[in-house]
Image (cartoon, rainbow, N blue to C red):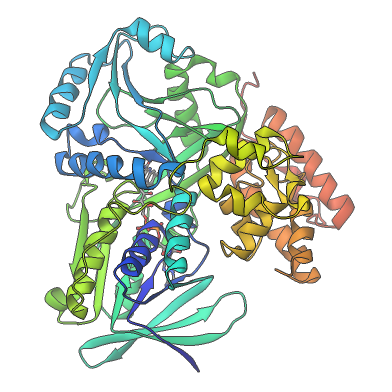
Length: 551
Ligand SMILES: Cc1cc2nc3c(=O)[nH]c(=O)nc-3n(C[C@H](O)[C@H](O)[C@H](O)COP(=O)(O)OP(=O)(O)OC[C@H]3O[C@@H](n4cnc5c(N)ncnc54)[C@H](O)[C@@H]3O)c2cc1C
């Protein structure tokens, strides 16, 4: 069996694993990361993309709030190109307790978060679609962050420093030598190849799946799987993050991002066995739409694009608590001290916003065990794409023959790496996905530099297929291009196309009504007619759409 020798093996290519791979790289500690799906295909790609100022936790979980405000300040600099510094509003609706806003202001003062009250008229000027009936408005330093770009940028930085990140590779068991873990056994899920990674330390950064990794060593890790569902609407209806000023509850946030707005969220405890098969329930969609309508009335006249769910990787430290009541604080579990098993460390809890801090704590622990005395550098070192900015107008001039908006979109997604994406041949300018303005150059970059192995990977790296047609009009072109670029062979391209469409359909299905339903039918016929990708028995056309008023 092939064996890779390294110092550290990391299980999990979410933002925590990616951040740890990078932190170790900057300290000169060789590491290999394995991810059973794609990077950010777990909870890291299934959240709101809110760069928390900490305000949402300030009242009930001050420790997490302090971590969030400190880390959001760092990420606004080192991960600049993945962040939109939108600001956030906390608004009180008629019927909400107006005193909650005062508690929030006081808690902000205690935790070092600048939360200030502004006149309602000013809030309405900032956010013209906001419900004019709001009675109070607070301004907080919330922002948005793209979790895919953030994760990819961490991995890219690590790889540029010599680390390896293996996607679609599952850690199937731990290699044990007496009282210590000496590496992992792996299987490539695309090729079926099995191999070993021998290392001095194994980092369990598998998020909610961390319990299963512990079970590989017969150890227990009690987790509390709390599902949250979210809904994406087709337009970006708000400029700033809009929060409802009340204790955490369903449907109390609308986050703008890229070309869309995202409605969040619910909190339902699910069986641990259900974490691989999450479904968004109809009643969750109803709650999300109804509550969002209270914040922005015109939401009900905007097309819903898709729905999805994630599971919060919370530790079940407090029996009987609701998912929202459990601290978002991070927890490092030293299995040598806790279980007498050396060479294994688990990171649990935390947030997307605090990933860098989690990675720093993990890398501190690992470095100490390995006798490496180099301090963490990730607090200052910019991620690839977030280096010193070049004004976008100067950048556009370098690319004659392509529209400024295409250059702008590429720059928005890849920051200062725009030159690597669009530079070189003119063929790079050809548009593959019109909804999100993804070019052939971006597809090439995603394959060659960011390690995309299939169309779903490509979507996470470029936003291809995330727009109104949900890939219907671009997926086949992208599949052809992937084949042309040697990423897949022709047979695989067709299978990959079907998998991509099925995956998109899962997210669209809960919101199939009105225009969305009509467009999906059209796309189904298109792919059935041209590629023979229909179900054959017509079952996919008999979708049970929930009964709703179509605006
Ligand atoms: C509904 C919801 C909304 C949220 N909103 C926000 C928000 O707005 N802002 C914020 O800061 N945080 C938010 N969070 C929290 C945040 O998303 C998570 O804390 C964070 O993404 C966890 O990242 P992770 O890397 O630890 O876990 P994950 O992203 O889940 O990564 C773990 C990875 O390990 C892989 N893996 C598991 N087992 C194996 C194995 N055997 N071999 C190889 N790989 C394996 C999985 O495939 C997975 O990709 C939200 C969470 C939820 C559920």
